[in-house]
Amino acid sequence: MKKSEVLKPPSYCDGLMEWAGKHVLVTGGAGFIGSHLSAKLLSLGASVTVVDDLSAGDMGRVPKGVELIEGCITDTSSLSDAIQGSDAIFHLAAIASVPLCEADPAWSDKVNLQASLEIISSANCPVIFASSAAIYGEPIEIPIAENHPISPVGYYGQQKATIDANICSLDSQSTPACALRFFNVYGEGQDPSSQYSGVLSIFIDRASTGRQISIFGDGEQTRDFIHVSDVVQALLLTGNSLVESGVSSPAHASAFNICTGSPVTLNEVVSLISAHVEEEISVTYEDGRDGDIKHSSGDPTKLQSTFDWKPETSLSDGILSLFG
Ligand code: NAD
Ligand code: UD1
Image (cartoon, rainbow, N blue to C red; front, side):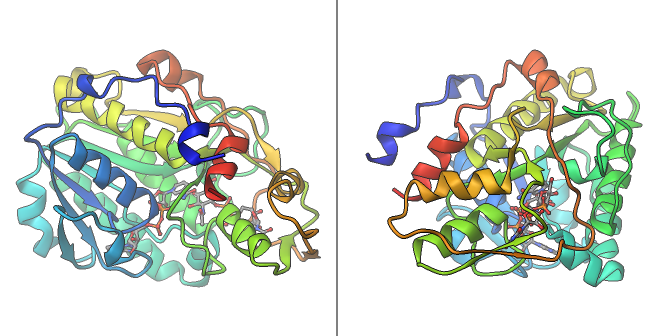
């Protein structure tokens, strides 16, 4: 079956999104999620500028027609023109890997924390921040709603939690901003070549090329996988609301889970993937990873009820599309 036959068109209407003619800055736009977002904004008529140091991103992923500023977000003085000239900023640049942040907490603090604070405080337009489910740490209640205690276990989660809390404490005098707490995002264009990539891209790449899959731990850890197209839609909806309504938007000073509410174990993921490969998948179980959380299962109700958003792509359809 072809991809187009599997993925249903999203139920939202692009015509509602007033992005035509808007100047939008996407930090981390050469990365996985940022490149999908940039392409969508461009297709909606926005003028898009990407800032990316290409440490994990790829210039080839930046869509034609998007301006790329190749630089580090810690160098905020050289970003000031791009920041000041924007109608909205999607702040996605980060060291997105939990183990990489554990390996170099000082640098990840500069990128994920200090530079983010600087970007938010110097912006005079809405900022939509890529927060993370990692801020909840090991959940005490499942599914995790936005009012679940914030208790990150590692540096990455702590850095994201600080920015997220900063946004949630903004008042009506401040720059409009919101935090979107992504769970495990997957989809086309997620680079599988590094051990620090998203697990689904690694597993599919290995299984489809007959190589062994390594599961860290017993494979019974759960993750709530959300397709990148649904994440992009959440970014656009909240961003649009902030641009239209400023601090009166229900998104302002608020945080939203971006997830499906249907978690799966890694062992279940392997079995979903195995339906698409002829050979039996070879799996090895290794020691659990430092800083890893066991269970991650989000409640998407708040975004659904505030913005009429719902995830359109099921995990099985999303996996199938990656084999297309
Ligand atoms: P990614 O690594 O593909 O994209 C991040 C981009 O930021 C890369 O292109 C990288 O080169 C760039 N970058 C890193 N450090 C930079 C710096 N100092 N200056 C400029 N650019 C820099 O990751 P992604 O999966 O697209 O994640 C995007 C955002 O969403 C990140 O903030 C991440 O923490 C967050 N997030 C991702 C997931 C997920 O499952 N992928 C889940 C929760 C949150
Ligand atoms: C991911 C995101 C992080 C985000 C968080 C939100 C990536 C790279 N990281 O972290 O930015 O904030 O979700 O919840 O997308 N695993 C294996 N074998 C492998 C690789 C991973 O078993 O080869 C396991 C890991 O130990 C972990 C699970 O798979 O238990 C998911 O790992 P990973 O995809 O790196 O994501 P998270 O750590 O959940």
